[in-house]
Image 1 (tube, rainbow over the protein chains, first blue to last red):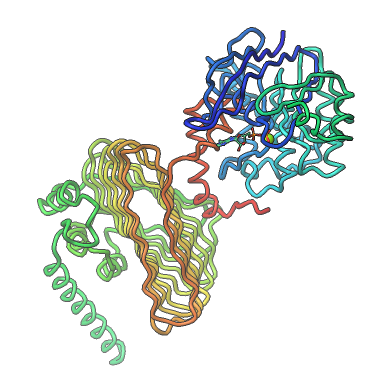
Image 2: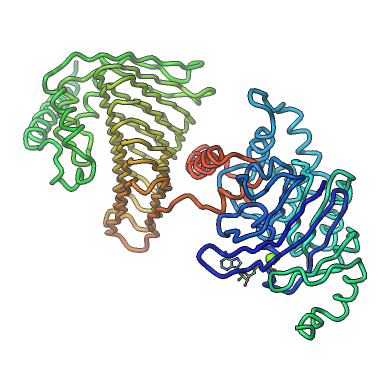
Length: 248
Length: 369
Ligand SMILES: Nc1ncnc2c1ncn2[C@@H]1O[C@H](COP(=O)(O)OP(=O)(O)O)[C@@H](O)[C@H]1O
Ligand SMILES: [Mg+2]
């Protein structure tokens, strides 16, 4: 069981081609890091996997436990176990965090079954306290007026509530202070399990020291150009991405 | 009776007679709604308002039921048929291009309630008006000095009914009134003229309106410094529905404040019209008055006419108006769907969230950062 991406080419709708043949396999239970210079297509890859309407798949496949991702709607992909913590979480005015999460969990229940409100609130509150979030955030509109760090934490809260089997974290560490970074990493580590995998997009070794990846990829100009172990992180930390240019 | 008393009574009677005469002239001179009238330009008067006028003129029977639900002794509801206050205030009511219709309303006068609220309300007072035919109810609300009150008016119409209501709201010094009008006339048409007179209190007014054709005229008059009026509206339109909203924030006194936020979610072939005006009288310096109309469009065929306006005759005022119409934000929708919420439900959440901005501000449960 794994997330398998094969020869994925994708472009901005009516625009530039961004992904130029991405191939990647993340087996269950593993943590993969994806690094790469700004503009490589990391966020595009994660959004294409979720079905963001700005992008168009040209060719290639993506399978989630054998299911064809690209034939599913955005919400179906989520219910099938895919999760993306966005680089820039969206503000949704007037929709409270609690209502949002309730609707998301309700959508996962069989038809006719009602979410138990009491246990829902209990879980939400305890998860928030694990993340060091004030419980008043339950009544606040989703991400509206949140600081950058609060938005990132809120996305991690959603991940912990929805318990996906494949979670992508897109630069979740940027905007987090040292303490928040540790809290969030603890949350992710607590979720690591043989039936769950993570794709962690980041520029920084700091996060990967907390959440040790099994495999590290470098995405460059819309293609995976390197795949190695943790030592690649150290190499990038010291020398940056210059090696990519000399190889060209 | 002393000479003075008799004199005062005679004077009052003369005044009333004069008012009646003035009104007769006012209505006789008024023309029924037509699209050449600026105040009726987009409201499709030919289809519904003319039908309303015709039905009223035919003097068809009034079919309506009024009921009131209140806890404690906070107000004394008075059935309106026997109430003179209402007739008098209604006679003096301003309209926004609907003098002729108001004249017809006065002539045939349905029923309704007068609420004299002299103690704080513990539970909201609920007034309900129901009909499946033609109904012309009236409401009169008076809040005594320093009293805090909450009133919920509900208008329910079934089938192709017609409702035409007037509301007079008077708020005394130091009083606080929250008043909401929830009207659902289904496949019918509905018109309401509301006149708020604020003598130094705080008024929060919310309308939530739904019907095949709905016209709202809300005129808030502010007479003293420190008086505050907040007007909110939150509506969802679909099918071929028409919502025609006209408002006036009239500042007679300086140092007073008003705010308006009208929001609509407009789907299918529906039409939302908003024409608002802030008037600041020449001596009403240091007035704060704001007005905002926001629409969310869910269909290419939906129509919005938004005409905010200002008429500022005083100096040193802070006034602004604005209007904006835009489709639902794709990023918001995507964000909800990306968490597993089916698209249709996500759309409802985003649309409700858009409207909640107005209803939350009305209820005062705004979460601040
Ligand atoms: N919606 C979009 N419209 C136009 N250009 C886009 C869009 N999304 C991404 N791009 C472009 O695609 C390239 C890759 O962007 P992105 O995936 O955000 O890179 P990364 O996350 O690796 O920094 C950039 O040049 C970016 O400007
Ligand atoms: Mg990015």
